Amino acid sequence: MTAETAIARLREALGVEATGEDPKRPPDIRHLVVTVPVERWQAAVGIARDDLGCRYFCHLTAVDWKAEGLDVVCRVENLETHIGLTLKTRVARDAPCPTLTGLYRGAIWMERECHELFGIPFEGHPDLRHLLLADGWEGYPLRKDYAVDTPHPPYR
Amino acid sequence: MKPPIPVIPPPAWEEVKDLQEWVKYHQERPGGDQVSDTVQGLWDRLEHFPGGWLAVTSTSKLFNWARKSSMWPVTFGLACCAIEMMATFASRFDVERFGMVPWASPRHADLMIVSGTVTIKMAPMLKRIYEQMADPKWCISMGSCANSGGPFRHGYHVVKGVDRVVPVDVYVPGCPPTPESLMYGILKLHEKVAEFQQTGQRSAPGAPPD
Image (cartoon, rainbow over all chains, first blue to last red; front, side, top):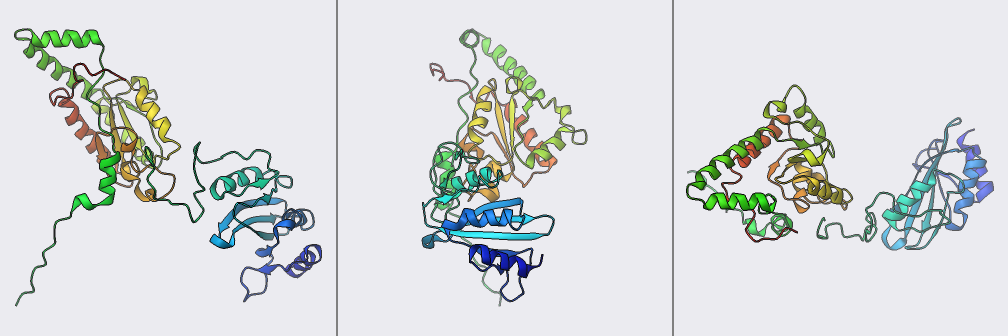
């Protein structure tokens, strides 16, 4: 499968245009980027898994864009045909994002981590506890409005 | 004509914010070792006996010699400094010649070498292990992370110095310190232990234990 056929499939299934990472270059099949609205998040990842055969779930994280909201970013890959797809969606602050745990079991820990560090509540997640941070942590450390240097006795 | 020699003003240490934080948050070593009331009573009676001070000082010298020549550290490796600590315990920089045996139980240990980054999540466990050690106990803070937080000081998850959690006797700088540095710190601690009772680090009479 070439990049053009993959982009055409995504266009007919989702109605959005996939791009390469660098707009000056022709799109590379290993680095395709798709931005979808949050309502079609699960559908887009489902198409990437079933239609393009991206069965390997690399990672899921978020990017804080301050007032514009947070980008949830996930990357899936097809290890046979080497399709690499980065899917992005924009959610508002403290707005829920649909979960991917129904599609990939590996998303459970990723979404737990993303929830505790960015404060994105994932709707439909089976077990949204803290994964890495200590108990009773206040605030979301990787958000840009988190005051890192605030001394909090006794330990920080 | 020579250019004038610039006069560098001495640093105003009380204005340094990190030092202010250290003064505010660091833990002091408590007054002394907690011994049983019977032993303490016998000790005080002997000290007030005519000529008893001779026995007291000589026995405390003997005790300190015994303490410093068999000081067992509890193995508490947290990060990359632990590799250097293991190298110190291994055959090349053999600290077993000082009578130090790395022991995996805090109940038998006299010394805790905090080697590595102390995260906020790990700090309660560190404090519990320190409290499980029998008195008298000492603590060496090894490496930049344990001293002050090091390169992670401005991160969100690291304790800014292990002295905010437990009292520290010797700080070993370095990132990570070489085994020679750690051995120098251990020898400095030996000097400190040799003066243990004489410096007045005894439990104050009447001070109730917690």
